[in-house]
Length: 97
Image (cartoon, rainbow, N blue to C red; front, side):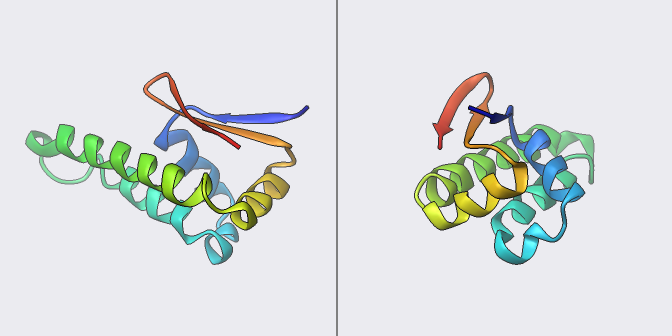
């Protein structure tokens, strides 16, 4: 069984940045990408807060959208060419779909 592991929001965002056509059918992926892009913007004093926000956005998208919506997962699996996707955050598995 072919599978893809996303080890966190940065890796997930890179995939969506490399495949912008997915933003039409899976806009939540773009939302994570925008959040990741904001980490290095602004002053350094709030960087940790932006990192935490990005992790929260990623976790929410995975748990509320990808884990609960079969149709969206079919689109993402087809795009990746896999049968299973594992979403991780800080080394822990959030979801396997």
